[in-house]
Image (cartoon, rainbow, N blue to C red):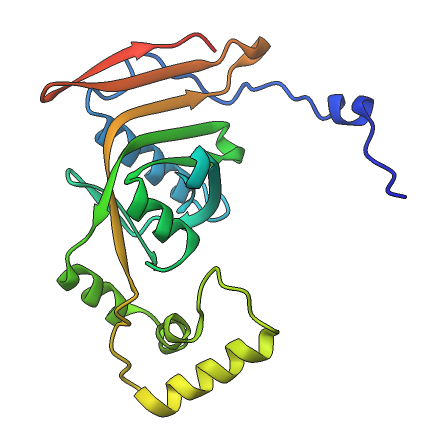
Length: 217
């Protein structure tokens, strides 16, 4: 029998958020610029894996699923990451090309949420990023039938060895592997504040412009 953590123990984890604030005057009118500012501050603060983001997709029966991926680029076109097209997330995005991303920089008491439509990056972009990866990672893209049931870890090791023999030091990008780009339709920036009166600024599309508005916490 599992002895669960009690409700009182969980309640005792409560903390007061007092590191910073986020107001309309200090935030950028362009959400991409605001994101760039916060990401740079997270990197400068050396928080663990500031590039890690939760990706939420919707599958069959409108059932949501999440996983953590790494941002690999961002600009006016959107937010980019790379993965296996045949994975669960890849299959779900093929069926429903809408997703949400979330960054949680715990040490800075900050969250960024991004919602939008998703498409594939160009083959040229995927090729360029794949070529920049360490050799083991490039071979790993060939070795892993991501999201499929396998008998043991030995399957992955054997697949990696087979890929190394077949492709040597210059494996080409697998046809089932490449990049996705989320085109933001809404952003939300959350800054923890004292007494749970947190700051939440949402940016939503209004034609070609962004509308910035405050949400109640």
